[in-house]
Image (cartoon, rainbow, N blue to C red; front, top):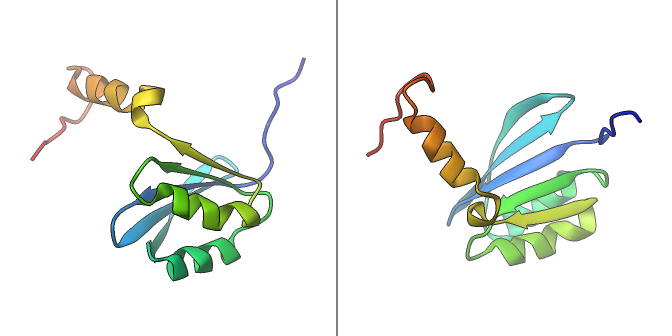
Length: 108
């Protein structure tokens, strides 16, 4: 049995009160795509720039469901995830505190 590989882009949104930081993963490369305003007009402009085959992921925030509602008609799939559900946040904190994890994390 072969490896199943998704064709298309993966879009990640880091949602803040006034803006969303956008990252695009495509062909094994992730790049920053800058910021868009978190207001409905900014999210709509982003949605119109996306492809029907794109998949979008964003973290649970106060406005995530409205953002997902705006994006859904424009893309293949929108996933809203909680770091508590995936364990990613705790795993990242643990890895950052390991002595062999590389550069130290500065918390402030």
